[in-house]
Length: 98
Image 1 (cartoon, one colour):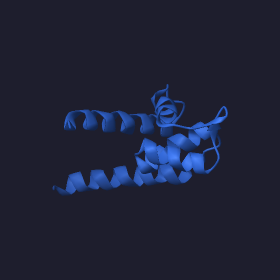
Image 2 (tube, helix red, strand yellow):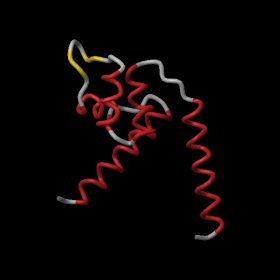
Image 3 (cartoon, helix red, strand yellow):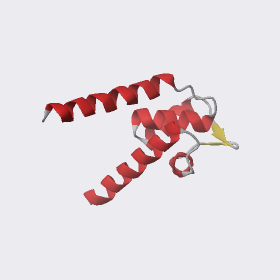
Image 4 (cartoon, one colour):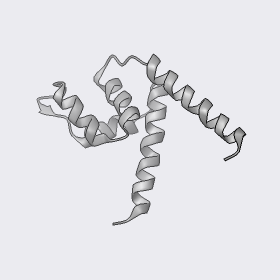
């Protein structure tokens, strides 16, 4: 790896860390987006939010609920980042085959 490439990666990671540390989610949707950026797993996000007592109506959240939140029109920078990660991860999983 060239030094220039390494410096770009470091700058990218520092920017990512700054975004994560400065973001303070207020709503359930923002928490779902924030957690997805950290965990990159819809299933893990659902599990954590359900454990915290979040519900959609009277039922527990499911993966479709979280996926719909992430895929919706981005409302802020964190949401944009989550949506890009989600789409990248979906593209990767479709290409892997079973």
